Image (cartoon, rainbow, N blue to C red; front, side, top):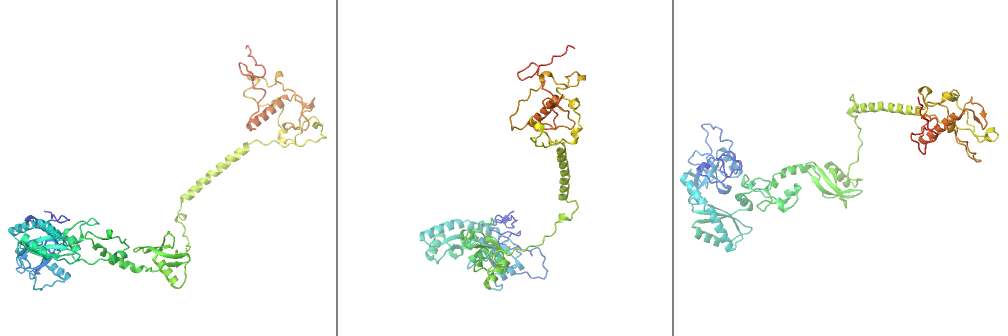
Length: 531
């Protein structure tokens, strides 16, 4: 069966017998019982076992009793022992054997003490039933005694009541800050319950251990499980551990400082040996720096200048260095140590073959020549700009007629064929005669109107360069039979002005009229032949 008062759920050897004691667990439970790791070790035949046994009572109270009759006891057995004064009491074996000798040495108890009481016998079923009946009276007795304390207006707090197994004595445990005169209380309790009353004052820590509970850590209170010796706890332990001095957080359920503040105190004291003590602010050229925080285990300290909210983290060595400089009368420029430039080691990727960065550069380098080729091809396909025209002199005979003489054309234009051979084939309007289309000769009704005379000082419109083998002028200075060339040149200039593209083929002749006519159509439409 599982022990009802054990947090580990171990098997209790006395539960089957009706055990009502808390923590009488024989399966290695740490609730107020020391684990007997020697119980399974076979002892020599001539070895004489230690005759003192540790007995546990209600509330975790333990006392040592002598096994004078050498009873074969097992941890957790209920035994009847001699009570203080007259009568008997029932308890449970918590420890036996050689471990009891160690416990007595720890608690500074003498093994040869004359006042040590003896174990009478192993408890029977009648003894346990009587003891259980007495325990049922404890709760009612405690509440009645608290009401009597309130009537007498005593400044004390009753925490627990324990009856002796033979119901001849009742022990009342109380806590108080000052000395209490409870003589009237003892008389009233003795007359009401017909028992011998014993008042025992305990501390607040013992009271919390008897009542039990759950601590802020989420586990059962140490004072009610394994802690038996209570040491004094001061706020100095909290200061060494850099804890906030908040009473609500540092105090336990007993209202005193937590006992666990002493558990890690020695570790903190050892770590503080390597950290310098800062009793005065550090002096720098920028001002005084005050200590704000200390990380004991990482050996880091935070300082802040006067009037500055920014904290600077320093190592313990740097703080000690600044303190030595201040003792010599020197002040550093700032709190941080001077920066030392270290030589950078070559990257590992520089020594590894097949570096990805190098492959990326190679791919990018392969794309650039293609873009350049495209740009060069576009520049080659661009038309050549027209040659500059030369200024016309007044002595030139052509100047009177208002015609500008262009500069000499390049030699490649002299080789171009002129006339009908130089006329490009217009896909839309001009078709070869073999296909039955229109002829390349201009129509009579589509002649250009005569040019109107220009005012003096005006600049003539640009004209295409003339070749060296140009036929002589006739009449108004224009070569005979060159009207189609002028029309083609005009169309080329107009198309260049509209779109800016000179590589577009010139339009030959007028646009053919649309079927059905219109206001914008010029000329007559040709009727299809009957054939």
